[in-house]
Image (cartoon, rainbow, N blue to C red; front, side, top):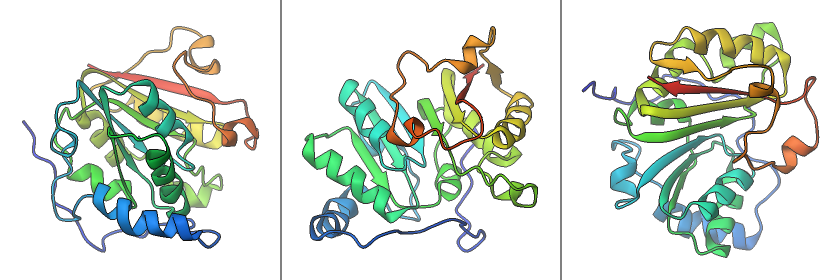
Length: 229
């Protein structure tokens, strides 16, 4: 089994907003208390089976935003352990509020750069990985800032168990045109599409978030699903 690479502190620059409006008193208390309890050390392997022992399956959501999808899926699937990684402080605060409001015990979240975290995760750790509407960085000169790159795609493939599912969604044509060729060329990933409806329709288990409902992109949402073979 291939071992996850060690972290590389300071090796990357994280683009985009780190925080937005000031947190409420409750949100700050959650970040300081529950947030610290649910995160994991920066220098430790992020193994979901150790973070959430006893779960039947494990899922990873990268960049969960306002956490509507993460919290909704965790409510629907109490036997699945969910790991969420998000660099935006306000998004983490919303996830923590959802965890507390619904009494969820099957979710761990961390404010971090997911690129660093996935390098320390073990092979075959997840049954599902979600990358939903990531920052598109639509300008060509910013393409290297997009999360889907050949190296991150290889890690996503490595993290999935055989038969596991990777779901990437976007409503920006530039991102779809960028990500699809990379994912198609990634060893171990097989595109599940069997016709236009395969990527144009919301998957049956998908949770539509407020962001998706705003239709901010330049195309209708597309869902690129890949199976680990």
